[in-house]
Image (cartoon, rainbow, N blue to C red; front, side, top):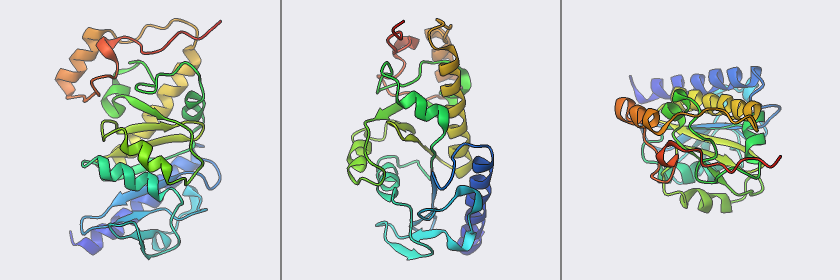
Length: 234
């Protein structure tokens, strides 16, 4: 596949996945953004003030390796966020940032551990998201968020921005989208079960997933398979 035809396909994929996420209520209004790295250098990203449900492939922002606009509409103000994640996660080829309800709610709870915001609840959460870090609140578009992301040293493919939403990278756009959806569903499960003393995966079950599926967890995430959470106050 030529570089041009590959870029055309990626433009269409961004719009297709964006519409799917929007139509299922995972990122309302003009919130959220998606980016994909290009084989020939640079990357594509959704424009500023654009609804993910109504993207035009021809108007997507094309940026060079330094994040400068080459063609298309003006890019999302979250370019520093995407740039930082690409810079620290060499395997990242795509990034999805949403304002999905349950993930945002999770980011606002006082008991979550910034190094692992969710306990090991399901196999698919660990397989697709690993551990999820929490980054402190920064106003949308604040360049300082890049330093916070870089401070994670590329250990996390899934990150929650406090009072804002999830940012998830993947080795393909599809993988990033699926992981973002898995994070949202797991956040929903956590909120549904909060205060009910649910049974999480055991240390042995977590270790089995690591061995069989090659799940990569930061050494401080899900220590020994135990919940990293402090129980909510009653």
